[in-house]
Length: 191
Image (cartoon, rainbow, N blue to C red; front, side):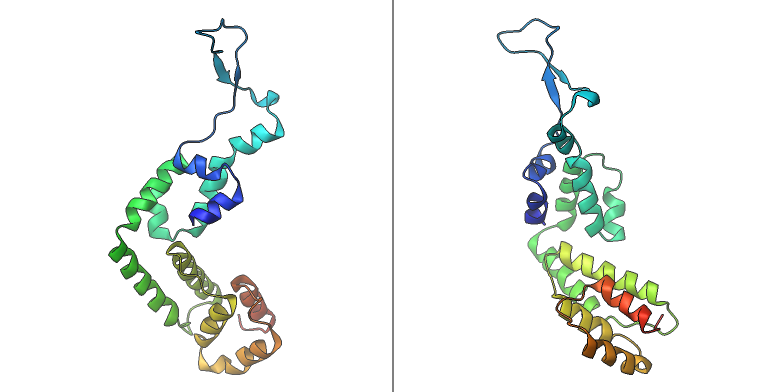
């Protein structure tokens, strides 16, 4: 997760570990104090493209973190204003190594054993699968697109075997992402 966030922008990790970036300028209306200029926040209409990029990093980082969280974890951090506070709470929630390993074991079992209940809608099944895959990503367990697709399709009711076989034969599962798989299922009339 840390590498993903830092890879989005060079300054992203600074925002997460320190604070949102304040875009400042020298205040020429105030005399220098000890040789250092007085600094004030730069008005929006004076900001450069680079200033604007830096000023929204906190919101971008929050968005990235929010997307990867499951509901219970999200509820614990949703009131935090800065991404730094969110990150601190997430690190706290993660716990020690044995706790993390236990969580991972539980989520892997949920993933391996996922089955679609006939009475449930495909959209609900997609939400469950997405939530589990996101939990795995947060715990740094990443399955390939093929592994996810095969596991999901093995979770469908037996009546759908013919349709799932058609998808298996027609697609390169290494390239099919989860949302695309469910879109294909709509095409095959399985929803």
